[in-house]
Length: 400
Ligand code: SAH
Image (tube, rainbow, N blue to C red; front, side, top):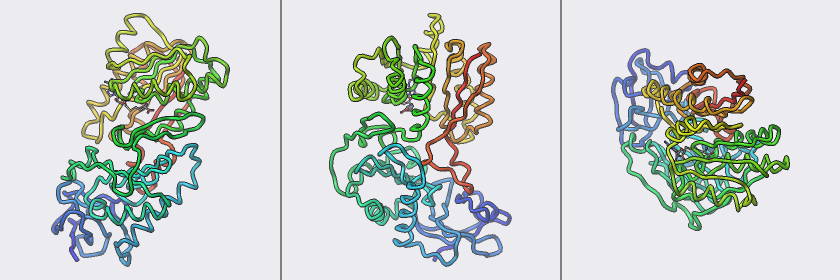
């Protein structure tokens, strides 16, 4: 059995059950990629069992803090089963569900989403890569499903020194699927869509947007970074329930043409063919500036940009980008209008995001009420031991 010995004083975060062991904390020891190592403090005390990642700054990720725990196929079967069972505790109004959310589910580097009868997994660390076969078997056993598609083509793989891998890992079938979320339906392709195919984490914010659309009867809606139009469909569903689709104008912007084509198809899929919805294949920054110049305004704006700051190191530059976007959006917001603004950057905390949005408002000369804080849906949990799990945060700002 291989041992990683930490430098003196570096045991504290593991004692608090934080699962990451950084390269800089290690005094000596090594192993093969994904191999299980025993982590010991500077004075030789057991701290954790972990998977070794020879190429990553996060040099090892803890599997267990229990010295008696064996890290074997049965261990992974139990972890997978308990993560799947935990989803029963959450109120999930969809058949698209995140079943395994990495560290929060005790499986660092593993993401698994379920779309109906199809599972999609990302193996993003050397540890889960090594145990892929056992994990795949455990996933089928815990869910009773037969189809598992692998989408290990996320950028995190590179940091682990792992090549991209995609394709059916167990069973096979259609990659083009349709899910039901709240009161609407959405199509996706697990082979070509972003992440595992869809942004499940925004499920409940889309629902909230539908409710606001129904209450406030938005006339002019702008959905920026719309991807396949989830927030657009939500707005239409809300407006429809209030009998207010007619006369409403919706503009959705994204720079991905395939995503926009799917967004357009979502109108028919949900019976909104008649809606006045426009889909722009454009850069959001440029479009917002143009709309400001044209003197346009909107009753509701969604700003859901991609991750500008994957880590704290990128935070400063990302902060400027978020501020600029939010400033333009504020200028376009009608009095009484609602801005739903998000950041999915792990490197930007909730407080910092709040400050960025506030200073964007000040620069735009706009005051507003922050009426709600939004976050990832509960199947993307954050846990007490792993605060980095809070990556997605959102604010609802109502212009004075
Ligand atoms: N709100 C969406 C998810 C948005 S993900 C949902 O609910 O499903 C971020 C999106 O931003 C991606 O679809 C990506 O194609 C798009 N994007 C990234 N940079 C962009 C830019 N500069 N202009 C327009 N769209 C951009």
